Image (cartoon, rainbow, N blue to C red; front, side, top):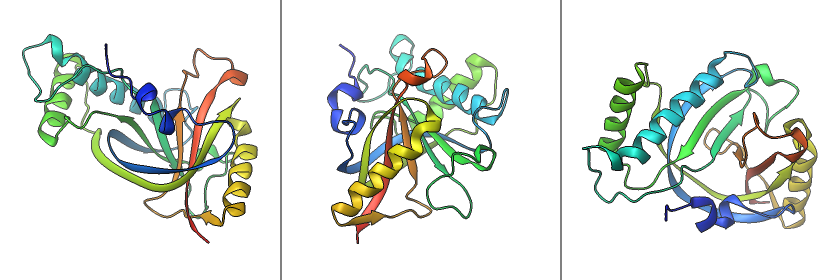
Length: 210
């Protein structure tokens, strides 16, 4: 049975619809950075996702090739995630999508060392006949956060964010955005195949004691 991060770490991937505090440890990700509206047809965001999934599935399917990764175990490719920010804005302003800076990420197992990551990028490039050099390997430790499950269209997120902020303040915390602590979303279903009202997104914000 392939290891499924969503099922094994429900506290990070399947929170309730009510805001809650969570301590998020260091995790390993493959990542692509970019700027602009994620809905732009043929834009950088679409290219980023293709690159991420290309490398993620190269790692997963290495079990069928000659390359052997030390410590490998079969796994379900985790959901797409994104860190979002806008220059001069604390949090995000969903009405200004063209101003978004983003880091799109997919979690990978800890057996993905720098060496194995570089092999996967080269292997994906050789097989797909495209450039994957924009993909990075990152270790991100979010620390103390407040998060909850948002159900519905992405444009409805501000109400959920407001509820998260109110909850944090009631518990004696304030949001703690900075260069390394960002608005974070985890996409539990595919927006291309899911009705907007049924979309499930984990929203996570960094917090600190007030």
